[in-house]
Amino acid sequence: MPDRAYALKAFAVMAAATFPSRLFPFMIPKRWRESRRLRFIGENLPASAMFLLVVYCLKGTVFVAPPYGLPEVFSVAAVVVVHLWRRNGLLSIGSGTGLYVLLVRTGAIERLLAR
Image (tube, rainbow, N blue to C red; front, side):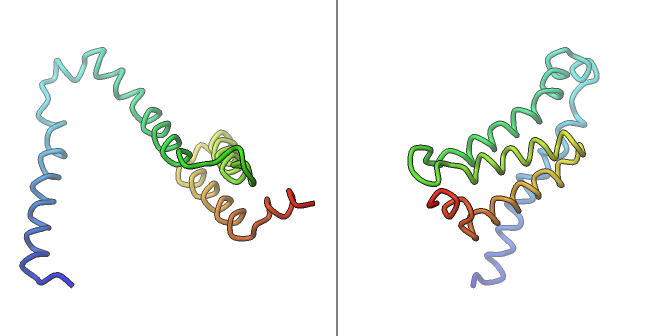
């Protein structure tokens, strides 16, 4: 367990890194905030970040050996379906995560493939 001084130093470093990143958007000149490029980034960055998260989550999936990535595929499909149905990011990600955990922990896909 780190001592108190170490924890305080770590907190100070995190605060020093976080505070400017939270302050920077308010320091952008108004003419920049109204630019087409910044508007484009604001509209497309959330989808790009989600795409990168999906790629990161699926990077170690083996599609050529049982269970052929089926738990991952079903979970991603569940996220998409629930998000299109309810338009709630927390609900869609939570349902996909729950389905994935259920499929992996119960071995349901493996048992279906063994038949």
